Length: 162
Image (cartoon, rainbow, N blue to C red; front, side):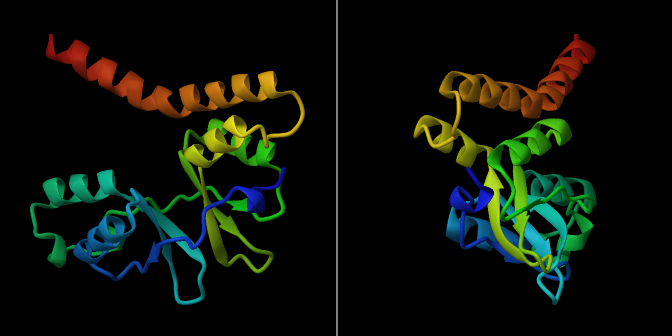
């Protein structure tokens, strides 16, 4: 199965010079927790999550309409290609501990978003291909890998507070 068969479209995006208020409104309107940050040529230059917005507002101690997306976005972005196998994209999520991969076309333009939720739905619908039992194990491994850094961070904080 290929990424293009499972990815979410249309993909929601924002520009680096837009405000965090604009980004938050876009997330709220479309019920999503992340936006791709794109330049004027539809090239991905970052990712912005609802968590990034909250942390930026707290750390920078300013209103969302005064803060720019580029001040809160993650500039290192792992992407996948439309024609890639779903297994390859899933491995990238696991290896890089990310929940979402922007999907690019042959010209490096943003055309979709592949989330860990999309992988779970594909596995549940038995669209993964091959051994369904193996697919379930791999998806569970990806969930654990993506959650591991956050879980370890929470555990470290809890121990430090004791």
